[in-house]
Amino acid sequence: MTCTFCQGELERGTAPFSVSRRGYHVVWDAVPAWVCKQCGEPMFDDQEVDRIQRMIASLDRESTATA
Image 1 (cartoon, helix red, strand yellow):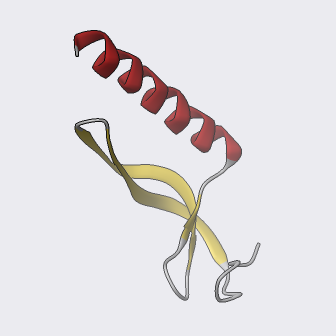
Image 2 (spheres, rainbow, N blue to C red):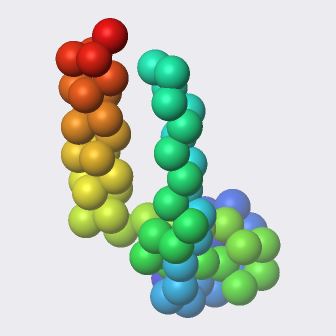
Image 3 (cartoon, rainbow, N blue to C red):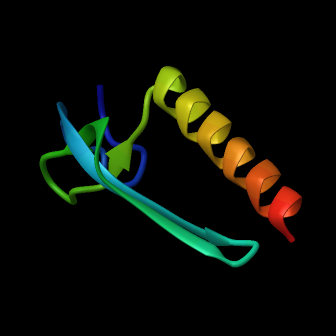
């Protein structure tokens, strides 16, 4: 696989991901990803994106329920 930004080679690794919204900030330090050897840009598999989206949706529901 190649990086969509610099066309470098991707390798399996981990990458940080953070989100700030609705009064909260969450950081995941090591999300499984494909990481470009050249520029360091991460690319997440669909499975990881789905997992992140489910966690954010859950946090959104919790922040709405407690507001």
